Image 1 (cartoon, rainbow, N blue to C red):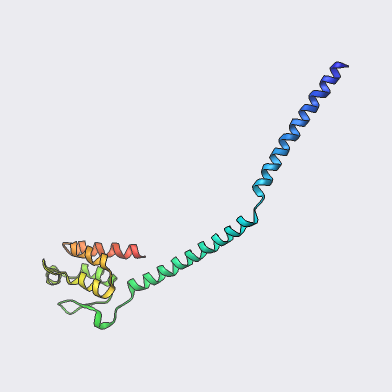
Image 2 (cartoon, rainbow, N blue to C red):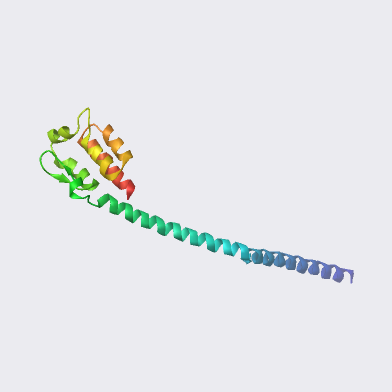
Length: 153
């Protein structure tokens, strides 16, 4: 009989430990799924703010892209010494491949840099204008302008 009692006690202990483990697991799951009302409101607010920021960033990128490719008014075009005109920053970068060295050096000397001055005056891009002033030739100038355009997009 003592043997039966010991077996019964052991099985009761086993069932109790299993029940305790199950209860702990259930409690952990419930704690994970339980959401506090305050936190739920905060997460909705954060989500709305994130959506607003994302949509504002997209709008800003669109306006930036438009600015980059937008042509200036004809009185603000950059006119090369051979008569060709440049209407925006993209055209300026592309034109660096087409113009001859003597035309580039007519507009860029040791004392002045007409292209960077135009960028500063018309587009108000001070950083780009400064980087263009430091460029020593057509290819460097073209690289600086293209890099600027890519960063803006």
